Image (cartoon, rainbow, N blue to C red; front, side):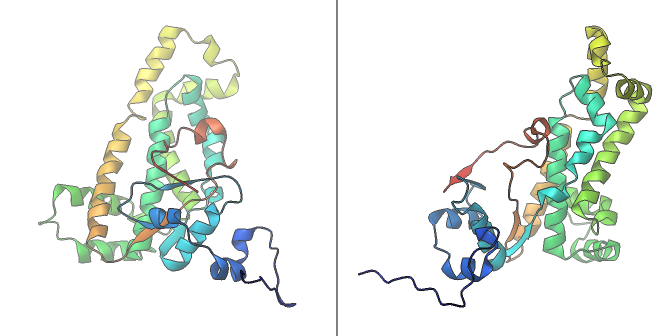
Length: 269
């Protein structure tokens, strides 16, 4: 006969959500093969897919409790800044594919947060110490150089919050686009039917001019940074996890959210 479940009078059950009921979550968690898959660094699967209430967030909480992990809160990404940006709206109105920029932004944020966690960088002085201590510029290889250059270029941003990082990267794009299309952006912002009034020839010209700022090279450069970061982390005994919950929730308008990245491997639970 199976053991009966007994609750004492002092038991308190019923937090707003089950995954935040820490008293019972960590004591009563039932292991599942999906947890081992998602924790395995050698496994390409990195997305949890399942119906509401099956335990996706509980899995992430278990990783957070037992590993070097950081939750990346989507609400802190300031993606509404992108939705409200006149520059981004201009690019969308002239049908420029901004998916490369959005994916690069996503990777940039994750790189910054992972480097901060793995190196304990919290400010500019920490970044300088990290650079001088760990890398001999005369002996670095090409892969490591991209990682080093990324840290050096962003050393003033490692104490930023996530939303400040998003805004800082978006501002770089805005500065470039405004220098190229300043008057046109003002027209597009002032007139609702701006894009419909453009001839196909004019729109094509604008698209060609804008593509140099939002092209695949953004992803290629960050891929090299990620390779260098991976090389650095492979030399360390610890594992590090960036955890993101609620990707299917309404944290940004669907048209922008769906261009940020593609789900390649899923762990179903």
